[in-house]
Image 1: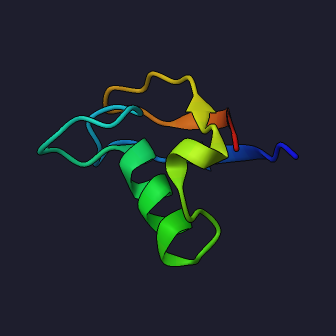
Image 2: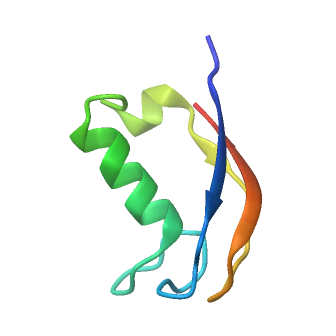
Length: 66
């Protein structure tokens, strides 16, 4: 089973969408929240995929899948 997530966010406090070490990113916050709530237990088994680019801006609509 695959799950699609539709996201919208204000990205002004982040350094883009995709995870970068040492700086906050949208993807980093999303994955942390999914793990903390128990919605995501194992990232590699979930076959997580995403595409996005924000670099300090916001996104009215984005999509990820698990």
